[in-house]
Image 1: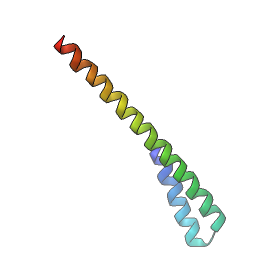
Image 2: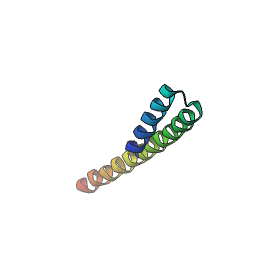
Image 3: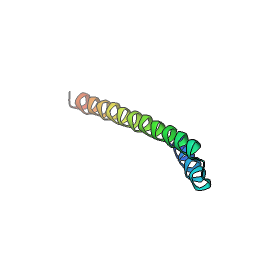
Length: 62
């Protein structure tokens, strides 16, 4: 997902350089949405991973 976010960002930069304002704005918005989805999924994954490791530490001491 981060790959697609970067690709849409690059498309928006190239479109802006050539003066295609509408395409640049649309690509930039898509890249921004994909980035925030990626960031949210990363944080959720990090929380679940830490929670799982925390369970293993508790089970070892029991």
